[in-house]
Image (tube, rainbow, N blue to C red):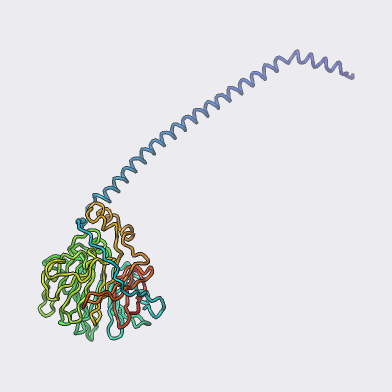
Length: 437
């Protein structure tokens, strides 16, 4: 039987009237159930989001609290470190020295060619240079073993370098006496010492000669000079210890200005030690006149060079029988060297710090710089590119002969004039530079 269109439509109408309400009711119930499920899921999501937000807020609050406490602790630690932390050498107030006018001396630049440099073959941090029998001797550290707290005395002829002896600690200075013995100033974390190195058929033996003065250990020994009559002069930059080496001790004295530097003389014949000069704010260098009658001492913080009789006893820097050969220097003087004709060479470790001398009377600010550490201190005292690294003065009449400059040369730690050439040791350099005179 065939169903026509009318019959088909009639059947659909009857079916919709018969089962349509049940279908509609079923769909309605299904939609209501789906809506309830979706609503419960939305409530769970909302509750989860609210709980997560609460936990996040609590975590952020704890983090903010911890950050605040940590920041306060850091601030308190910084204030303690920079202001209240005890230091071995509290700063002393002083009057800054005057600034010298330009001398108009001839200008000389450091040589830049190979003929003007001596390669030390990996050695660096030269603290002293001497010339003897056509050879150049230098106190330096092996660049491959800087952390071993030892120094070598090396010898070079300009092409070959050899180690003569090795000492424990920093070899801050050495000098040859008339008998051929070698006198050494050695600095260790425990203190300084004056030593003698004697050579025989068995080799070189180093013995400690002076390690204490009146029962107290030597401070930061910085230089040694041998007089023609056999007496040995040695300088102590400051009475405080030098756990981090001579440079650190000199920076500390520059900031603290304790004025505890001294110069002593040792008589090998009598085996006695006598104080020559005290009250020096950083006795960084020594030089003797060619006849051995006059002693010159560089005063780091006072920017001057003192001149005293080599036979003097218990003098005070700037006091009776102690006058300045030169003062108001453009930098902080360190190493000194004397020519046979009486010409004095003055090396500058650092440039004059206007900030430091502006705050000469402020022990608080200088104490902060003293506690701040090496990086800040080096920024305060670094030599600018156009600063003189060495000056030359005639000790007979006090006239300035020459100014030696080296662009970016850095701190001068050692000087040695040889005929018409001046050799210079520079901080951190593996070469001995020179200037033609």
